[in-house]
Length: 290
Image (tube, rainbow, N blue to C red; front, side, top):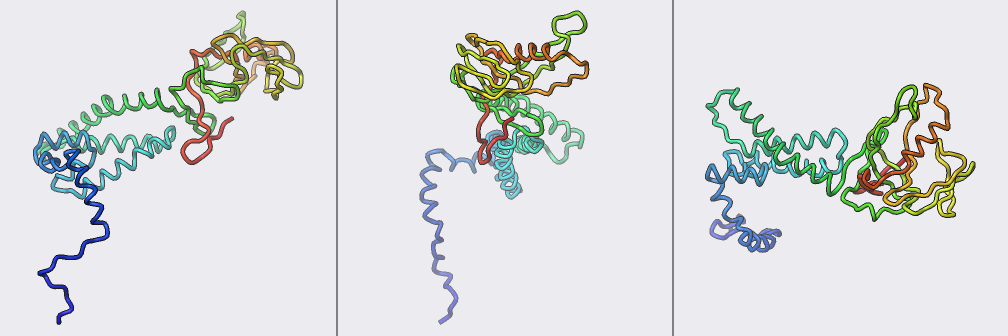
């Protein structure tokens, strides 16, 4: 007998065939079986391109391009989130918007080159301004924001209520610039911005400064640069005591006592200036804190 398989018998089922049985009810429940029909129409294809970036090209004359772009889009999403704050995250975001714009845009090949370029640019700007920028804003408002500290980036958890902050937590907060010239109270300049610091004391705590240590409600803490050597501070309600982590450039030979007084003013952080709390770990790596 001929050892070759007979064409009258169907091929044996593959090992993954049972997985398709689980897929069929999900496909019917989500109405995914209608996608091929919808994808044949121009309006339906544009809607699919808006909802499924890259994958909508599966119903185009080049379905392999849809697979490649769809995979590239969903690889770019975690790259954008994990490495937020680094240049590679911005590149991933640009790639996502570009693939999304290519999925939505439908241009006839007979159109002039300048029309195709202008249409692509307009779709790119609309998607970036109306979809991606609001999503990024919500992400930074409710989930996390990337803060550059020195030569590295720290992810800050936003959306956490100020009342949940405890002693020892690292928080990000805003510092408003202050300073003046000759004849004013503070003859130095402080550059405003967002910084990161460790909460030494919360509302109601007493901070006592000594030449060798700092005491918070009787607990001993190490001193930081430019701290006063004596005195006691009572932390007010709605505030934290966070000694500023900043670089001091004393080119004008400002008196150390004036620097200590200015730092003391900055150390009283109001809850209204609070941004968020630093994550201890971001995905698989431990964050580097000052």
